[in-house]
Amino acid sequence: MRDDFECLLRWYPPQWRARYGAELTALLEDSYVAANDVPRRQRLELARSGLAERTREAGIVGRSQDPDVGLRGGSVLVLCGWAFSIVAGAMFVKVADRWSTESSHAGHWVATGGFNLVALAYGVGCLVVLSAALLALPSFVRLLRAGRWREVRRPIGLAVASLVTSAVLFGMLVARAHGMSAHGRNGGDPFYGALFAFVGLMCFVAVGCATAAAASVARRVEVSRPVLRTFGVMAIGLVSTMGLALVSLVTWWASEAVHSPAFLAQSIGNGVPFASSVAPPTLLTSGVLMTAGLALGLAGLVRVVGSLGPRDRAPA
Image (tube, rainbow, N blue to C red; front, side):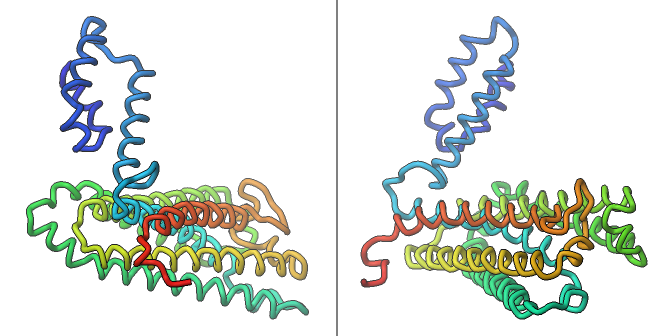
């Protein structure tokens, strides 16, 4: 029974367990040893409370007296928003596949501008994330040399496994789609439709696992104040690219919906679970995910800006 209590305590961060774990374990023993089980409602409450404590400790929610914690937490929150946005961008690319050759109309230049700006925004965003990863690499190496690989082994292993699995499934999807008609790709083939939805879900899971691994590493690496401020500035730039991508996607979408609804009607995934020539499901999901990512990014941006000291902010 005591082992069960210790498993429940793992929802809480290590520092919290070191300070309050013994007291909570004693309380659980007094309350539930006689029943020989912890009720499901109490288990869920412990999980919720533990996760909330982890987010507070990471500086993602709540107020922190340490601006460095706020900077780190805000940057991680922006990274989570980028994960949503990158999945949305991948879906948009599939929807807009061959649109420039199959969709020709008077307002084509508007859609072209929107599409090009989406590509530019994601290109710049990927460079920002890659630069941040390279900047954090020396700190990660020091973490490994300190013998702390066990602390990040599980999230990194899950990230690698999910990325490999999603890559294999994506290859199967491409092989299945090769030679299929547009009708078959857009709801005519139930197996392909189900495979498309499942691969999309797995890709989302893979990006989520990779983001969780990055956040786990970010919480543990030790970086200097100047490097942390640089991460904050990069987070601000990343949110800007996410906003540009969303506005540009909406511009492209509006132009195609007005001038070329027939192309949207033939877009990939249309017909699963419904069909539309204005808001096809895949494009609609892309817009929703991109909006959710930007919302998370803006929440992180508020924490980043609020954690920058007066000497860190640009003069008015």
